[in-house]
Image (cartoon, rainbow, N blue to C red; front, side, top):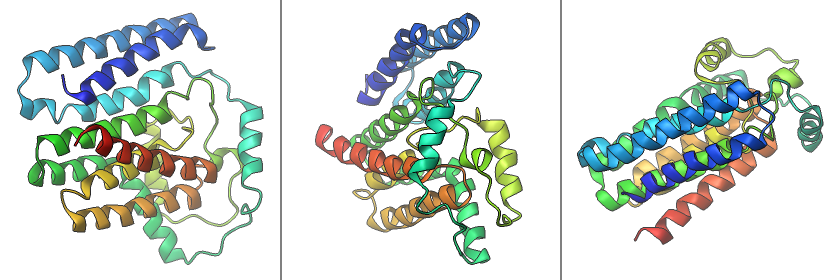
Length: 258
């Protein structure tokens, strides 16, 4: 199996082992365990039976599954102590930031585009890179995402826009972002930010394939991070730690796969 397939199997097994130690209901525990076992079987069968061209695209599904499976184990009530700590970490900037409305619009669009970021970045690697670079990409991206998603059952909070809504009017495109989030998200805040971690990891690993694409993806990653903060989708500490996780996993992938 590819390294990223081993990582996916290990992660899904970890979700199974962690389920009894969460505060989820028995029904949710069994649902998460059953789906995690199913995900493990899919990865193993895919690694054995499917051609390489399919196997290098399947990790998109492994990333999505890695986000949802711990979300099933999240408690029904958010942790007020953790939320209060998150709010306390950003007292220094919580005043309304005077950002031009056009930039707010741009950063909001960038955050919305984060769902297309990984497929678009991987397409560059797939078209221009080799097998090792594709494996490195997925090892970095999955490790970054899984590192953030696995904390959801314990470090659970609401997004800051729901905990401490901003007073400044939001750009009109924000309603579209919230429409999408309501349908593709479990509405729990990931700590660190999975969006930022995954996009940062993807941007780092595309550089050896195309420097120009790496620079472009880095600019978009920074815009996504700013959109996460200014749109109140993530706390500042989520974004900073998420960026650190993404860069770290990207560099780690270079050391692991040469």
